[in-house]
Length: 137
Image (cartoon, rainbow, N blue to C red; front, side, top):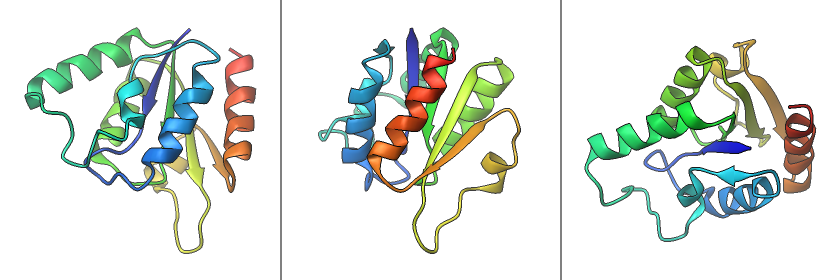
């Protein structure tokens, strides 16, 4: 299985360690095309590549992926774009949102019936949502 993991880069890297752990968990199910999103060396300025090259590569990965796993706790224009592209391509999509006081998931995500939106408080709970989603595919 080919998995595209979407998570914030330029929108903020506060969840980088969480992304790393989620990606590590996803590897049990197949190849994570966007594995670099969990790397500590990737800062909020993004990769040292031309924007067009990143765009073309990421679009190709979304097209190639069997499923999309998006961590949407940190708002990101790029993740939003990837989700819309994935929806257009009829991909199977799960959006994961960490419940924290004072934070709400975007209505553009939670209101979209094509997205499976799952809320979690611990990484173990997040992994359970991932397992349930990926074992049904």
